[in-house]
Image 1 (tube, rainbow over the protein chains, first blue to last red):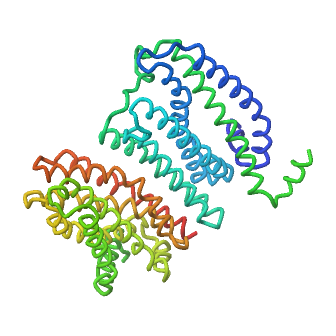
Image 2: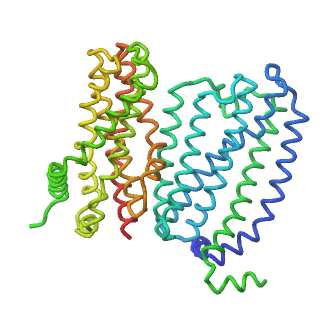
Length: 245
Length: 226
């Protein structure tokens, strides 16, 4: 009885309708939170005593970097669910994650590079956290390349799902090996236990942006998932009814 | 009397080694590739041994990484082509053990020769004799991990046409830790320091790879055969 909600997630028409119902619940909060976070970060927060106004790029850079990792983990979890329970919808969700994750990763790299131009004087510095972000981008690209290289949809689903699971096991290993390789980046100043190094006026907009980006991700995922389901089920009869509504 | 998983694995190991002895040319290719790539660096940078010594560990490791990637194509290709791999999957034996045996054979045929040849290339790059163990041991261990990781990628790309570039794209990001610690070990050896610390990390990755990679690779083989 308690598991019916989970079993129903295996049905494409149900998830298609559910995603449509949930979309506005994520779209509006995402827009509101991001606008509030941007206002807080760009206008209300005081300038940094060392970096002046340059530090404000953190309000896009850090949430993008967090999201890139979170999307990869979400993708791997969806892929594992698809592999274990052979759920078509889970594979569709994993497939929808890839492009979103790659975009967040590119955003994190681009903003990191711009920030680096101001702080270090170069657009690219072999800084470990930027490098592990770059490798994360390669992981996303590998996933998408494998998916597009295999014609049979089921095989593409399962092969790329396995790759995502192998990748997620490797992500921490890659991250720490790159971290030990070379360290220039400022030490983490937000996720520190106890008192964070940032004053509240700077930190609050960052956290708002983080929550906003999370809602943005879920919103994008829902939209892309519906598209993916439509593409996969294009020959099914329920689609005509769903689209006629 | 039925064959145990270990016996079956040993039989496959012996078979792969025997087959390789009859098709020697295939396994000379990665070695020749390695030799050519390491020759390109002095030609493109400078013949000055002092400068080459500075970059020797990076040159050796990138060349070894690319050579062992190149060799990955041999791992399953022939067996998938003539249906042997399907028979393995249907044999009722643990496919994980069989894949592990194939991977081990592959490492013995590509990784170990590479590790034995690397000192030659190293000396041509001005590496002192005392540092040669710092080339052989890390490259032998590193190629083992690369064979194990690569087996997953090779199995995933089995049915794909022109899989070479795709295999590279899948495997290289996962090989980054091996490259970092391997090159660090060789670099420390060239500078005359102890390379134990990165070697331990490399060994840890080898243990993790031996434990987990055959499971993933055999699952990948099954997916590709579906």
